[in-house]
Length: 123
Image (cartoon, rainbow, N blue to C red; front, side, top):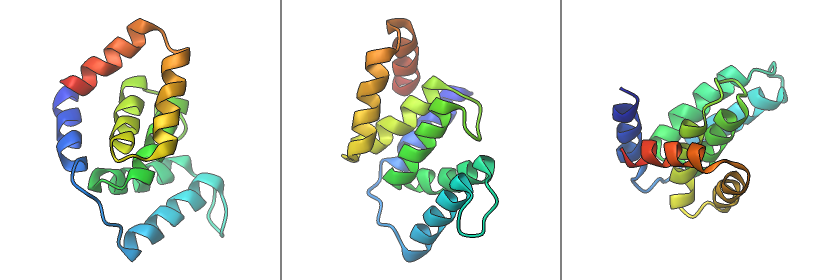
């Protein structure tokens, strides 16, 4: 089931993304919920849902943020495979912070953990 979901995300997110004004406003709102700023109560859970909607559309900044949330277990259950997937999708769009974060993960993660994450992406 998880591999079907991951494959679907890869297909959905591989298209070129052109951010609309609405998407940008949703991204800003997600950031506000994540940080508890601009009159929003801090809620990483709400932020993760907003980032997910944008990430599924192919928005690389949201893919990066969602990957980071999964990596940290902030608002979502920590999951290296899911984090790596979202970061990979953002990095594939040449989003430099995602490329850097993937490099950091490779430096501090065991080969077994990386292998499982890479298999999940390949499935």
